[in-house]
Image (cartoon, rainbow, N blue to C red):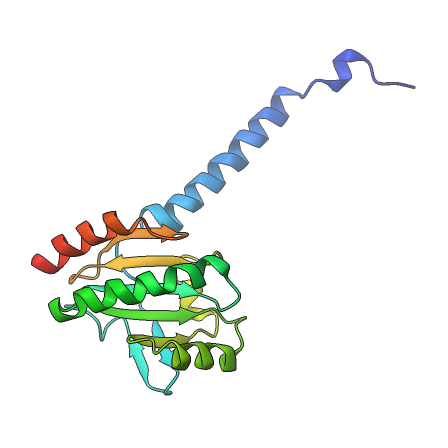
Length: 173
């Protein structure tokens, strides 16, 4: 027996259910990303074994960049990240490059050493990515001001001209 034209139409109850689910997803996304204006309490374990937390960085302007050695976009943007850091470190910019938990520590250490990354490099156990809104896509970069407010979240390669303007403004205050 084939369905009748009337039986193929979605019922009003189904439309309401879909709207409720969509609303719940939008609300969760807002609270996870849109309303998170302040940096979460997170601790990063650097390749040296030293720990650095967002509390330690309070009072500084800094970037937190989630990346992976297996990420083509990350590898493409990293020289520009180094350039940005080198141009702004004298004005007080801090930078933490956080390798994702699926990245092999020996690859991260090798990349960091051979490219002479001039900033802090950390290995995430998954907790930092989770605390920063469940970061899953790389690269994802957060610009944080002196008060711990997230000024900008970039998913993918930043538009570096815009980033420079935001850094100029944040470091001037």
